[in-house]
Length: 160
Image 1 (tube, rainbow, N blue to C red):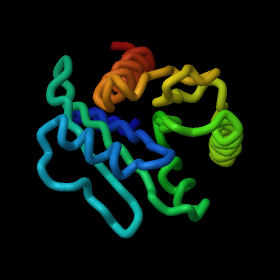
Image 2: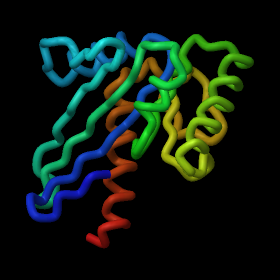
Image 3: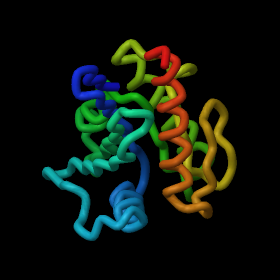
Image 4: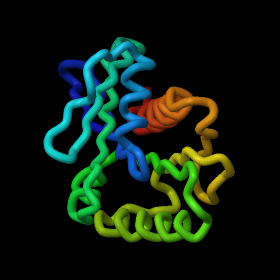
């Protein structure tokens, strides 16, 4: 979380990982009325969403993803992230377990505790250790869940 005390602004970074992140980004953009595609710099996707004014603070969420299979690109999007969203829809149980292990290793690279780091899963069935969202509810249900959790954590950290 980036906190600008003088400008009273909060910016959160959320990493989205998994299959079809490009389709997920387009669904979110469409749901919030963004008619252009998310910013694409090569294989990096970025979607800024503003919540506007929340108790006198300007709040923004920046969702990042990469369509690259290069491990360094995945790590780049995870660096200094406040939360991670894993898109597990249509993924077999063994592949899901491998992706959870990969995420745990990637978080460890940055000294993050994988058990306490805010993790969210879009999956038809719950995934142990992740806040769950059924993809049938649509991507905005997951965006709302992520934003509520991060705002609650920020309130505790900032003491307001």
